[in-house]
Image 1 (spheres, rainbow, N blue to C red):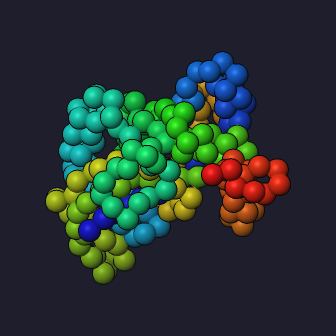
Image 2: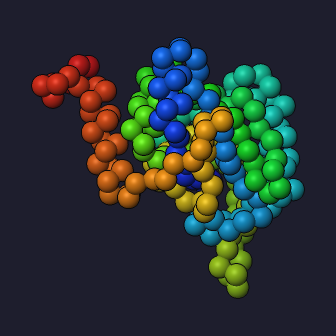
Length: 203
């Protein structure tokens, strides 16, 4: 079964402008996953299972500079390079929180992500993995089982994990807009990127 989790965060637009003007990569940092905590899906990741998978992720994709992720979750366990928007360059623990530094790529999807950040849109970072879960009816939770395999982290529009935000390195957190306002603004930004001022699609 494909398991996904979402953590919302915002990015300081000043850092984005500095990155664009200096041609330096945009790097954001923050919580990318959490152990031993019930999220909005009612799902809990045991610490020992998540520790194992994070260690494998660090020693594999992160170390080899191929910890790519997509803009939006596909309905697949395969990372589609045509939709890659970012690369995770550093992962570490802070208590039960998994922290990450994420470099936004200058790809079509990465550029859309930068524009969303520039316009103050709160999106989420979301883990993608394969595994099974076990229901705990008395506590209203489901626990991820030992067969879990972490695949990657994607950027998505729908958050589900409580109280975790990503910010650019060295900058303060910004508050998000209301969900309806964000949804309309996201659509307008994407339309502006792919269409000219007359509304005619460039592609």
